[in-house]
Image (cartoon, rainbow, N blue to C red; front, top):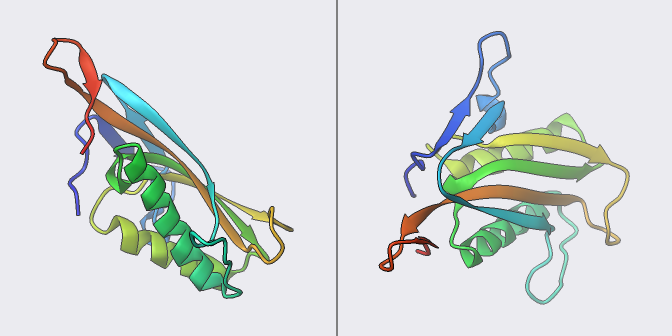
Length: 152
């Protein structure tokens, strides 16, 4: 697992409840020379477009899809500042499932700011979960003396 990005700060201010058990932070900030990455909503479909019926399987696939999209932009979970989660038929059991999956993905890394929105339906029949992300990747000096995106 990668280490936290020094240009990113995650804050849980005094006076707000501790969101760590749910796998997120209240505030995420990025400073410096950065490339912003916006990942569109990722659902539980695999590369062949197959969507499992099971909620947990959709969450696992959506998080895998998110990682693939981030990697295509030279980013990883350590660069994510903000997540938006859409959950059909939201319940405490589904919250626990999603929270566990997020904590497993982020591990010891600081967790991003996050909003979970219960919804009656998503774009596809049978789709139960969707996640989008905003990430900030530090720029590294290029050999020409300017800045170029650090792609790893």
